[in-house]
Amino acid sequence: MLPRRLLTYLTIPALLLVSSCDKGDPTGAADSVKVLRFSAIPDENTTEQTAKFEKFATYLAETLGIKTEFLPASDYDASVSKFVNGEIHLAWFGGLTGVQARSETEGARAIAQGVEDPQYISYFIAHTDTGLELNDAFPTEIKDLKFTFGSQKSTSGRLMPTHFIRQFTDTDPSEWFSHPSGFSGAHDKTAKLVEAGTFQVGALSYKKYDSMVAAGTLDPAKCKIIWKTPHYADYNWTAHPDLETLFGTGFIDKLQQALIDITDPDLLKALSRSGIISATNEDFQGIAKIAKDLGLLN
Image (cartoon, rainbow, N blue to C red; front, side, top):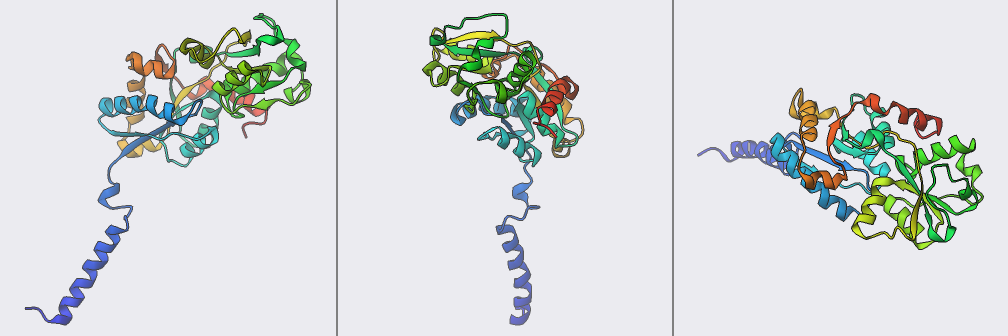
């Protein structure tokens, strides 16, 4: 039998080792599991968003043989912050949020986009009581009406509508409109506010408007399309450079191919896209320039 004093000396280091493991040592086995965490800019409630993107989590996990987890973001800024901080490694961004996230994350890459995204458009919509109808010309009549954008960081709900208003009026919206513009916070909210007549006119993603009409959650007789903007590049999947550290060199290329290979109608429907194609950072240089001109990008 060992002397009591020697037993004490041997026991103390063992207790310290157990204690350090109990406290969740970041180098311990509990954190050795590698997980691809991804998110998306919110354009609807987080419950619906989580439900549709959990399908992507399952697909990526099975295709790439890794663990995945979808983390919803409360707003546009949150999605960018999570990416820049490395809390998420992949994000379904809009054109502006993607540019912002990549500008703050060296080595970040836009890797995929929907077939429709290089030719995206915004709708300008109006309540039926305005008497406005669809026209090819920019609707200058909206100058004296109550107008709302979507989120302040939305490409199709704020950035590009602002750009086109400035282009066709030679004036910033803040000075051109007779009434102060609003910010609804999301595309679906813009549509419902105009449908209700709370705002007479608004701008939003054409995809969101079309999907709401198709789902029967928006009445196109009350909330009418009055103008369709010229085309621009928008949504994209952006990958964080940490993925190469987590899963090995070349993983981002494998992830890109997994996204491009998606043919499952349910996955494509979740994005409101007909297919996925490759993307590069250069595809969004036009968005970056407009964002800088409007003071939305350093």
